[in-house]
Image 1: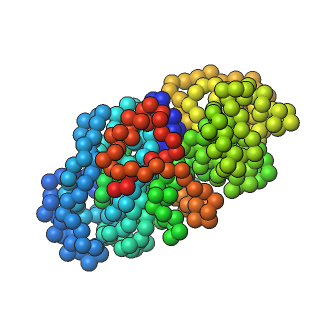
Image 2: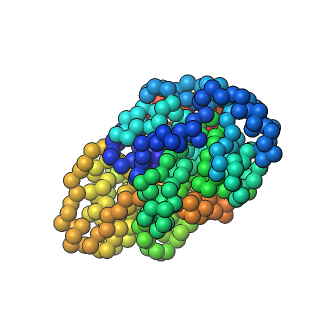
Image 3: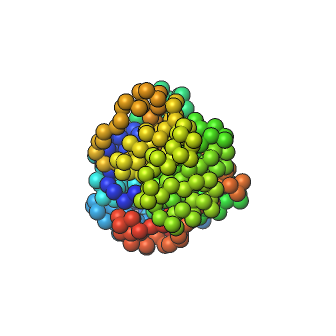
Amino acid sequence: PGCNSDASSRRPTDQIKSGLQRPRSSHRPHTEPLSKHSHQQTTLNNNPCTMSLPATYKAAVVREFGSHGIEVVPLEPPAPGQVTVKVNCTGVCHTDLHAQDGDWPVKPKMPLVGGHEGAGTVVALGDGVTDLKIGDRVGIVWLHSACGSCEFCVKGNETVCPKQLNSGYGADGSFQEYCNAVASHLAKIPDNVSDQQAAPILCAGVTTYKALKETEVKPGETVVIVGAGGGLGHLAVQYAVAMGMKVIAVDGGDKKKELCESLGAFAFVDFTKVNTVDKIMELTDGQGAHGTLVLATNERAFSDAVNYSRRYGTMVMVGLPPGSMAMPIFPIVLKRITLRGSIVGTRQDLKESLQFAADGKVKCIIQERKLEDLAATFEEMKKGEIAGRIVLNI
């Protein structure tokens, strides 16, 4: 989900982004900007907790699976606990394409405005909002809301809350000029990070950062990043280097080799030219890697990771391949290898991942486009033709 892979293959699964829920009708009035109540604009502009705002705005609206249209829709006031965000730009994630196509087992709400990497400015406050003010720079993220009271939320694992709603899936997201979002689940963007740089970190960045934490690799130890030259991978390399890990980057092609080495990887393994397992074992003096982050979606990447893992090593899976696959159980048991899934990150993970960017340790490679380019971007995404991350200026 979202950033649980940047490959072009479809990947159906029963649990998308962990705990992905069918939209609940009780939430739709708070997240549905597509009704006809344009008279509410007067209420919005008479509210002292707002800026002067337009009556209507542009949004990329999916009304039937498979396509979207750019529509002019009425601006509605934020519900209690929400704020209205003027979206300045938004990243585009592979989950957004799946949401539009409706090809995952759990279907998104309809009609739908996708997107969950939105960076913008607070322009209106709903009742009860005290932690944000007009003019604050914030990010709209995948986790639109969580219940806050279940076992998982109480333990700090809100990303697997069974009652969560997700931006651009169960709630309208960032492919629009204005977006109403739950104030408590917005990310605060550091002053010295641009909106365009912040947008991909809101999903791709925090996903890879959290996954690296899940490897439990310590400074000076070796982590293998599979798919290191992609949209997620190039961020993972930077986070790993900043966290003091020795990075072995796995990908294919001279351009990706050059990119990964420029970002700080101490070695690059081209899976199209060498035996990945043999090369990594050679690079680690026959001991294997302390941790592996698998961002790819092909079956060989997962089985190889087991075979070059160190004793007591940890393999973290982010890529979501279609269907099921066989795994080499024998070495998993004998070497006491831990296999672990990782899904986006908590609000604290988001804060930390953005701080790396604020400190100049992480920089996204982006292509900037317009909202009207979303359809063409999806077509390129299907063909696997996108380098880095796409950011749409709204």
